Each structure stands twice: as C-alpha cells, then as structure tokens.
Image 1 (cartoon, one colour):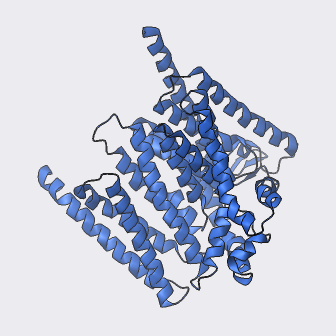
Image 2: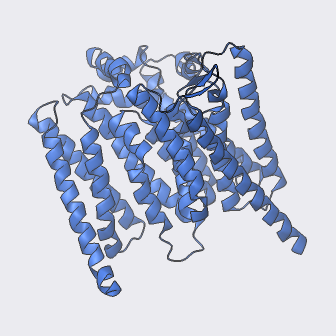
Image 3: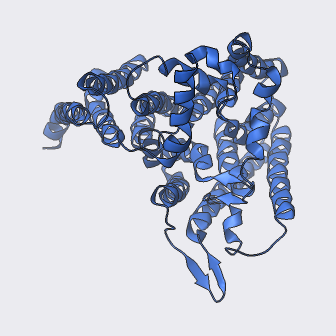
Length: 453
C-alpha cells in the first residue's frame, strides 16, 4: 500500500498543481482593473513565474518525479498570489501609485533626475520602466515582487542545501523552497501589500548561501546590490565582518560591496540625479519616522502605551544595545578564526536578523522580513530549530495584521499600564533567546572539540 501511494504521489501532486494554476488563470480573468488583455497578461506572468520556479528546481538537479511533486506548492503559491492582486494598500495609494504617476507624467527614465520617493535607485528604475506601460500599475508592482518571491525560494533552497550538504538525499532544501513560496509574510508583503522587501531579502539569502559556499566576492557583491535596494539589508551585513575576522572571507573580496552599490547608482548619475541626493536617501529615511516603534515587535513594545519618557535617550540606548550585539558577534568571529563552521555562521546570521531590529528604534513591522526567511532556512536545515522560525514568523505575521487591519491583535492592561503589542514582542524576544542559546551550545561544542585534540 505504501509503495503504491508513493508511486501515485507525483502524478497526484502534479494534477492538483495544474488545477491550481488553471484556477489562477480564472482568478486573473476576473480581476477588477485594466482591460481583459491586461488581466490575461497578469495571468501569463504568474504562469511564467511558476515555470521559472520549476525551471530553477530542474537547474538545481531535481529529478522529474520530484519536479512533479513540486508543481503542487508552486501552483498553490501562484493561486494565492492571484487572489491578492486587486487589494490596494494605503502604502500603494499614498506612495507607490503617486511615484508611478510622477514618472508617467515626466517622461519615465528622464524623471529619475527629479526628487521622487524615498526608495533607492534600483526600485526607481523599475518604477520608471513600468511607467511606459498602459497596464495597471498595481499589478505591475505586485508582479515584480512575485518574481522576487521565486528568487527568494531559490535562495532558500541554496542556503539550506549549503547547511545540509553532508546529509546525502536530504529533502530539507526542497522543503525550504516550498515553504518560502508559501510563507505568509512573503505572500502578504508583495502580492497583497505591494511592498518589495522580498527583493533585498532574496539578494541577502543568495549572498549568505554564496558566503557559506566560500564564494566571497560574489557574496559581497550581492550584498552591495541588496543594500542598493533597501537599507534594512544592514541587519545581516555584519555577518560579512564576522566571516572576514574568522578568515572565511578575504579583505579584498569585501570591496565588491561598494563597487556593486556604485554600479547600481551610475545610471541615475548619468540621467542627471545629483550624487548627494542619491547618497542622502538613507539618511533621509532615518529621520522620517520619529516614533520609537511603528507596529514592530521590538523591545519598545515593553514600554507602556502613551508613557512619557525621554525618547532621544531611549532611542540612543537601543542603538547602543544593537551596536553591542554586533560587536559581540564580531569578537566571536575573531575568536573563532579558522574554526567558524557553516552552522555557527548561520546561527549568527539569525541572531543578527532577529536581534538587531528588535533592539533598534523606529522599526516598521516589515523590517523583520530577514528574520522570517533566515529562521525559515535555519529550521529547515534542523528540525529542532523549528520553534525559532515559528516564533519569529508568527510574531512578524501578527505585526503585519496590525497594520493591514488597522487594529491591535491583543492589548494587555496591567492596572493603569497598557501594552498594545506585548505578545508579538515576547515571541520575537523568545526567538532571539532561542538563537542565542543555540549559539552558546555550538560554542561549547567547538571548545570541547579543541580540548579533545
């Protein structure tokens, strides 16, 4: 019976996946915006994304039987995204659609020289490019992020494979691929919300995979591209400092980071964008939101709502704490010189992705996107680490719901004190503690190994 079940599994999964893709086309045909051609065009792009996902699996050496099984999660992922296409978030209405209209009205790429938006150049190139199309900008913006979702899933497969490469025949990389496509925050971030965190997230994941494969130049170059998309890539960037201090990345390879960033802004400079304005984008972002937390499950959620305090001091203490965390990991990297293995490096990456935004002020709920995807890969590579992924991804998802519903999930009142997101912050703190405990265990193992020599 079991052998029969296994024999029919690939065909069954492929059949269900094809049905999901057919339903995806049907959903797109019934979308509200644009012409029938625009709607069918959206369906075609989703089908191409599905084909790309399966093609990448084949490129990574998946057998045809495995490919048939993977048609199901790929098809389900595209169907879920099709169902999200018509939703227009406040961010789209207040920002993205206005940027699109600016480029539309001012000549597309020639408008790059002007002042528009607070995103860096690569995303503005995309906005300029789609301004030449007559298709609904909402769909184009979301389809770009959905393409990034496929790249993210591929990166999760590669990163997980680098962690389990000694385990022949492990299915962990495939699980990571499917789980990344269906990760709730990944679906909500791009296909529903219209945000693009998946782009820099995918680049960071691929960069980490390359780093663990000891391909330092390509790895740091991808981090430079990630930084050119979003400032939030700096949460995991100290990992490359750790790898350099540990001797796993050479200093000359680190120069690929600024070179990749500079390459990303050269077109904007050629189009007349002032260099100072380009370099000042991230400084502008830093002063844009004065609140200590913007629905982020961070340490500042433990401050009672409406409490009077010295916000400048609280902000400075958070930055100091994040800096101490980074310095502590850099010191560990130096101490582990020549002994830092892939597992320990990955654990440090998880601590950075969870711990740094947890401690920093002025964080948004979306700034834990790297925490979601890095803990996902970490858990897929070792099932005992699943609690960290559940805590981080659950906390992040609950925080998304606060913004998307414009309503807190669980308000806690203790006498006269009110805490609006205490459970989300506790869950993220628990994920950080779990990762720190795992790192402590790995360091003890390394020390015991040395004592036995």
